[in-house]
Amino acid sequence: MIAHAAQWLLQGVTLSPIEPSEGMEFAKHGIVNTGLVFFVAAILVTAVFGRFFCGWGCHLIALQDLSRWILIKAGIKPRPLRSRLLGLVPMVAFVYMFLWPAIYRIVIGRPPDPTQTGFLTSEFWATFPGLTVAVLTFVFCGFVVVFVLGSKGYCTYGCPYGAAFGVADRIAPIRVRVTDACQGCATCTSVCTSNVRVHEEVRDHGMVVDPGCMKCLDCVANCPNDALYVGVGRPAIGTGGGGPKPGTLSWPEEVMASVVFILGFFAFRGLYGQVPFLFSLGLAAILAGLVVVTWRVIRRPDAWVGPIRLKHTGRIRRSGWVFSLIMVVVAVFWLHAAIIQGLTRWSDHLYGLTNALRRASLDIVQAPLPLGSEGYATVSAAKRSLDRLERWSPVSSPVRDRQRSWLIYLEGDRFEAERLIDASLAASDGDAEAHLLAARIRVDDGNWVEAARAFARAVEIDPQEPLGFLGLGTVLGRHGRLGEALEVFSRGLDTHPMSADLWYNAALARALQGDVNGAVSDFERALEIDPEHLQARENLAGTLAGAGRFEEAVPVFDEAVRRSPSDPQLRIMAGRACLEAGLNNRASEHIEVAIELDPSLKPARAWLDAGVDDR
Image (cartoon, rainbow, N blue to C red; front, side):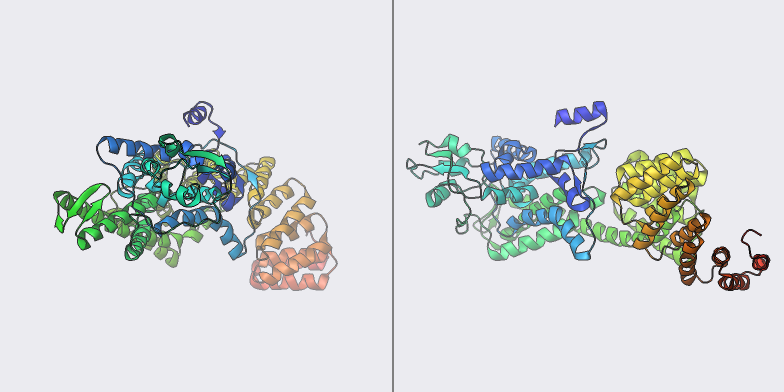
């Protein structure tokens, strides 16, 4: 890890993170990266050798093992809290992260993105958390999760990668197995940090079948009779899991823990724009465990949190009162987090209603249109909601700073929006939408060089957003760099082959370069995707007419006129094409209607009288 980060710092480019979560990009956008290759390879190797990677190569397990070692040195031996329902969380998380994006595409009928590679990156740290979240992850997904849920508690109740490894482990022929020398002393179980009942499993199955076994081999090393070994044989698939283990929650506790987990997850995920998905799983699991303990303090004569006794023979001990005070603080924080999340969801909803206004404002061919009364009301409501959220939240968020900048820009205060968005980008450079706003403002300032740089940065950060390609290509095209503009549009189409706007702009660039056939083909492709793209239809007709292909241009103009009958300039162009094609009656009809719509076009009658197109 250190070498990987060092190479990026020294050279600026390195392999994309060797982290399984990076594999999500394949399900989302068809990107094959280093993380995906690593994850698939680890699963395949696990299917042969068992779940050894977790025990020998996972940094988070190293953290949990270190935390357990320190706690034991302090006289606190973690005890596992066993839950059947919470044990399903890793598999649900795996499906959500790696399968659901593809399933969702199929459900809505959206075609998959073309497969592409992304093995190198200059944004090595883009998907990693900042220092604050990293430290909190060490504390909570290390010490706290081990203290409350037991050794490797995060792996048991939060890790989606472990779910995949656990499934692959079931078919692995290489396992921990037992000889006749075993005397059932349970030393193996006492030293297992994966909470596996090793002595019971080898007694019942002749091998360890629990997919939670991470092949750390502590059991093999500590067996006093050398009865355990790693060997090849039949896999674990088809063997039963046995009954509930000591410490398993009762079913009422299971249901309560599951409900608390769900509520906690939604309260913590994305909190303050800081808490990532995997961290929120760990926090929710800890919360569920703490609430179960609280319930036991209330309902049972004896209660423990991890190894610490809170209540004995119906009497709450001093440690129990301290725990109760801590739970009051936890409950207040949980409630506050839920309020923040509710306000955030509502604020994001109102901000989302301005999406059409924001996307329209990125059309750099024209100046930003003033807001109508309805648009102003929408922007004002979003801004008030954002102000309310700011009052409740103790932590600033680059996302909220970007949203506020956009809303102020839409209200027309370009200078204040520029100040805010520049400050936001100085604090966090990885927001593509913020760079799009910065680019739009640079266009307003006439600073085309900086606008192109901002659009290029937006493309670099988020190539899945076509507006970056559209903006960058348009800026280049307006300054005569048509070849570069076409290259940008083409790159955008590699990622967004169904973007009618990209096909349309690529066609314009080809037309301006004199590539009539290429332009016609691209205009037609844009219309296949979006038959309502009037600009593509008009420019297709104009390109055909400009090339002297009037008979082809006339039906295209006819369809454009049918879709936009009140456009006098379109009528004039259609009339001129009809004249050149020898269709004088239809030309007369178009020109007369154009004059009715705009009397200033009366001189166009002279074309009819002369029977030519250029008078």
